[in-house]
Length: 181
Image 1 (tube, rainbow, N blue to C red):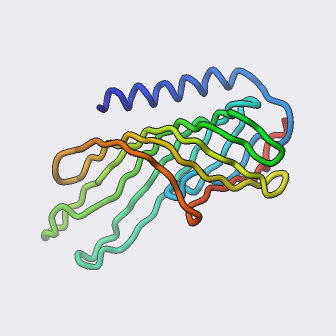
Image 2 (spheres, helix red, strand yellow):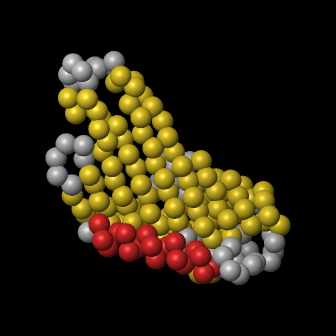
């Protein structure tokens, strides 16, 4: 399963490299925003009129009062939105992507307290609607399919697959500010 996920990630990176050789014309190419609420610090950059690259980062810390220790977490989201159809105020996209997450957990309350990380890699493809509420500001929602590999700090790793989607509370957004086409 890890070999398949590595090949999919490599295919995404290769596709971005080929697309970056072209240059698009039109409005702003780069934005601040996010596709996934777990990785909200990011943006989208259109490499051509049809292909973009998304990247997002999330991180945090919370106190585990049971062991009096701060536990950290992070997420990295990478995607390649590909324009299928463009309307007046709407882009209809397919977005292959990969999401890595890590959450620090207590594996032995000690003393001393021992921690490790629960990690997850999700590889998928989604259909996304990016609706422009103004000329350079959009909201987006997506649904699709993903393969997930989970590696808990304690216990065996597992893999699964299923559909993905989001509701109103986890819409993405982008504000296009950079790189006039």
